[in-house]
Image (cartoon, rainbow, N blue to C red):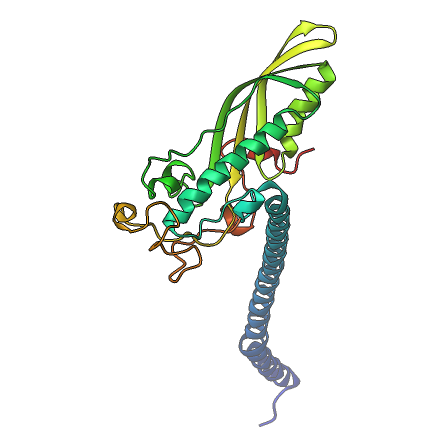
Length: 280
């Protein structure tokens, strides 16, 4: 039987449609869907990579800020905290309890000397001088850390002195120089506030309050001596016979961050006056 040209055309068209349908539904559409999925996944990964890059940048910036703050605090520690040697005006808490009692008395006198030197800066005449609180010689040895060095009330030993009212006389410039000088008091963080001026001309009287903070440097605190041990030990006063020396065995004990809060890290602000650190 001979097929007409029209039938052959229809058959060819049907075969072509079948082939096109197969190509469309079994190849092109699945490939397009897969390609779209890959594009979306690529965009998601690129977005995550961008976020990761931003996160790494933020971490890098944070580390730089921390390092900068640590460097600044190290400079503060070097010049604005007491030394670790009592003979240099400072204090070392890593000594036995009896020695600490003796050294604290020396340290308190050194603190008063530093304040006496500071209060006359600018060339003023002091008419009401500040007196730093002294440690109680009759208090138990263990009480020194708590009452004088505020430890462990604070996580690090710190000397906090509210010296009350100070009265000085001088010219306006002398008094203002005197008040501003507390921002750079050597070995301590200090603040003068509440300045009140009276008088006329070149003879003025200035009244203000001062507060002083001393972050105690070091890494260790010698273990406390049991109460009553001083009376039981032979030889009498601190450092006498039978008393272990400051360099004796068993040194060590509770540790704290060197140079006050942060262990030489960022931005310590003392309870009073610490914002003046490094001020002019």
